Length: 293
Image: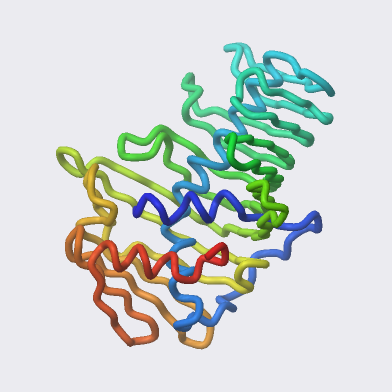
């Protein structure tokens, strides 16, 4: 996926402290030209939301529970093979292993398939508060994960494949660049039977499939269904996939389709109206509705 389309958005997404709504019955977000770019960006960003946001937090929390909290407490249960199966956190502060300051409370459970610790079902009712100081700006972000998903190693571009995702991810963020005007944003994602899967496709190329239902709150408000009609195949260097088709269905018959004919030829079709882009233009379009500007 275009490298720039996820990082800016992820660094300032979030949700509030209330329990998010249940997954909507049927799609409720009407897709139109005013939100199609943001819907596309969020759909294509799903791998990075898991790989760059959720999994590092989970690993850092479990590692912190194993090493011992700098403040607060964490109880870690392991199985006969010394694999973590349950971690319970009470204001556990750690920065020794994660590379950033992290405060965790709640619970994470892991169930494994066979002898491997890489194939698991994770269930969580946990909150992660992180502070990252880059030297030029400070990110304070709270991520809440409630629900479960299945993880397994990926032989493709991702570290893992994630399936059977039935979970709520809510994130509150504030980015302070020292100018006295910090940027704040909130988003909640409610997943229903969602999957993110990557596999190798020959030399120096990998496929991506994202499928399932997502309900948004805050940044967008409503639900969509995402279907990978044809695997999105991407090589190592280009920002855009060289082939593949993604369909997104909204409410009231609204729809969005992305068709990648080559790594520099993309067609976006919003409610039957098509626009052709090269990869740079497509990336610009994706970012055109980014609320951070």
